[in-house]
Image 1 (cartoon, rainbow, N blue to C red):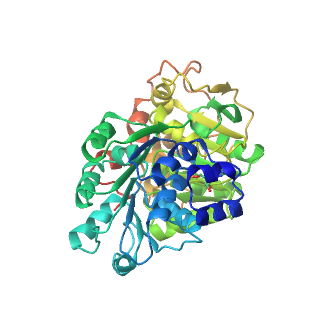
Image 2: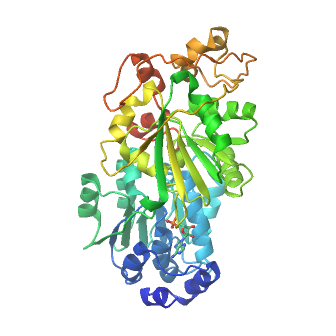
Image 3: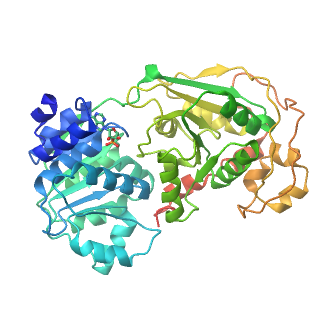
Length: 455
Ligand code: AMP
């Protein structure tokens, strides 16, 4: 505890830390809390799970007083991260209570308007914060601290201009804290423009590479889902996250896992915010052990006890891969990241492997039983031959109408349709896959002004 005291944390926060039984400050906390509590502008290069919430909470809880208007704003890329930050801030401010609210899209704006009148601290996503600015329902005249959380992610998602518009509405005389896993040129530009003599600190990723085993299976297209079922049933695991690139694939995987008697829940941007919150609560409280998700869940969220991360689809590059696998092997625990590589994943996997630091071991295909496919996305697809549809990426092209089909003829042939071997020279026999299956809903959101799951 002495180490925490030395950082400059105020007594009410130390009390919470004692209750939480934190033994020592994380690297980013040790480096940033002294600066933050002195009122300096800070650029912190730190990954998800590094303990950065306490780092910015230390200054906010010290400097903000209840009932004196909005004194701190934390901008986050996703609604889930806004909620998570709100919960963490609430916890850390237990002995110096502040009115802390989260403001994001996808839910009614009216309750937020009344909450904003009495809020001391606001967490929010850029789109909804701008809505409030335009409606003049948010007042930044008393703002002292601005935090840009996961700044690289906000920029990736196309929020750069929105973030700048919001910054320009904040008082010039303020403290600005920027947290980002990577510091890009765009972030540098923002730093030059809007921060005052910032001090840069960085910390290693909290994920310990010696505790994280990474592997992949080069699986025939038709056996991919069966392999996932096999692994889920045979690997001893705690909480499991299965990442897909598209909403349709999330629906496909989550719905069909139920036929294998696996309790899976799904989260992607197509669900209402209410449903997303309920899903995350179920997963947090261990009521469901398998969470099937798009990258909406890859960043920022701190979920304890995730032992396995599966890439049912391979992410588009190493950056996204690293964020996904960072959900496991946290805080000294062991974890496994397992990628299921089918023909349409080769291009993405080649890009992932450009990161020479990633050591991903190839596993041999085990003997597996054919898993039942009881749900497919589109009835039209179901009338055809499923094996054909599947091997051509059919399930991904269907609409996510949620229709059920009694069609259950998955292919059992297990025939190899293409030569197996070294994926690093991508083969392109199935170019149609690349077009259809990799047409992720997420990247489309990134390139636009606001993602479909933000607004
Ligand atoms: P964060 O990166 O802020 O989302 O924190 C990740 C997780 O680590 C949260 O569950 C925190 O409660 C926890 N945490 C933060 N700081 C410490 C610490 N010094 N020791 C142990 N756990 C911590």
